Length: 430
Image 1 (cartoon, rainbow, N blue to C red):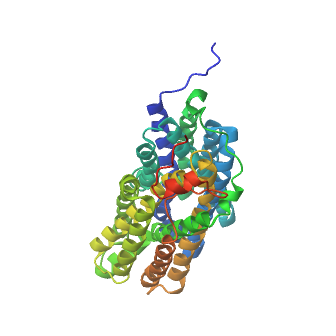
Image 2: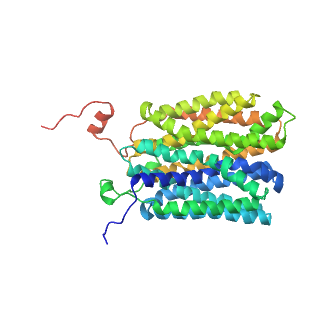
Image 3: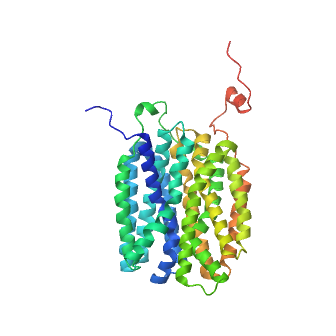
């Protein structure tokens, strides 16, 4: 038996990293269940959106912790923990629905399941980048694309099939989802591994990142990321209901069942855009820069949100929502490369994990205010939702002008570093 353990080929590892992300990304299909839970369980929209909020908050916070933990415990163990928690969250949620306990549902789907996603989310992105140092931008884009298209898998495939087979019993649907995800995720996690030590020998062990997290650059990156996520996730959490509302006004005689099908179709279409945006914007950021991409994302969405405020054509409304998801995914695809450029590979996983706390904060803010608006102002919720989105995107756009793509350096720069920053070759020593 050799001292060096056998590892799967890097293409196989990249494939299973993507599989993990696809399964974890099904969280974005929440609006498929939202209306059903409101109707069957008697929840308000605010109560329903809170489950999604807690899941995203737990995701972001656990991802921050996982980023610090990854170098110590390794990707396989972390992926296994996250996968087990994610599947368990659905199973606990199933029992909660059977017992009619919304608090237990929050604990299962929100805390346990959401934390499981966060534990697993950082692992595939960082691991794939290590295996493909020559193509890290492309491979990272493909892996995070999986998270974007996860909602398609659930909303147009697995969830409708289970709803049909269980005759709409959501407790059984959640139970089977937990079983199916466990059967897919746990074996996939067993394949994930770091490259051979010789391949990463040049990388120094990550040190303390506290001094980097206290820089103004980190704070501004966090703020810009937060506003882009908050605007997009507010649409994701209620896109099905928002489309059904617009379509119902355009065609008052349409059946609720048909409206629900239209909503599920939008979830599927927008999830594809979410996934494609992660490749498109990541590719574009390699050519025009990360900061330039974020400015385009924020500015163009401000225009789209303005149109969405008064748009009454359901087809145009759907197309614009898909564009919002294209930009939402683009922010997530651009951020890992941005962190790598600014902070370097040595502390990338720790800083990237910390930056994902913006996801946690946005996950609470975005869906919750939309749920409140739908409960309090049902006739004007759509307009108010997009108006607030414009304000958030505008704030993010303004803060983006405080960013640059330069490497963050702690301490006083050397003469050589200063010259290099301005494109002046350093003099050779005689």
